[in-house]
Length: 157
Image 1 (cartoon, rainbow, N blue to C red):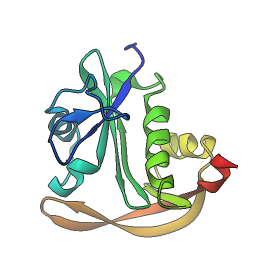
Image 2: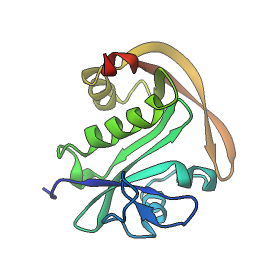
Image 3: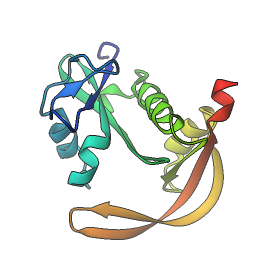
Image 4: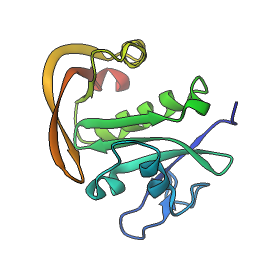
């Protein structure tokens, strides 16, 4: 199992990785590109500055993408599952959304029972089915999904 991950957010202004306090972190400057390559759908270029990666042993092991009040993607490499990386990334995403919104939401495919259990254990509530418009480099496509929501005000109370 890899060592505990750290998170690093790619700075849109400088194009380099910076940790939560703005200081350089263990993430390499090309970490977001690497994270993009690890997913079959990829990240659209406009999402790159919205992505935070988790790094262990100088390797990207996961990422979270936040767009406005949506936690758009949470990805953890199979080698890091069970290490706490997903919780770290989700918590970070919630903090980013909570800075501007009282409620966060995300889409999850109904058949992804593992992800649904994870979100429910973390206080997310299934708000029902909807058609999610997923953006890719080739355009937008519709995915049947479940909308999960979380009231972020409860975290600060």
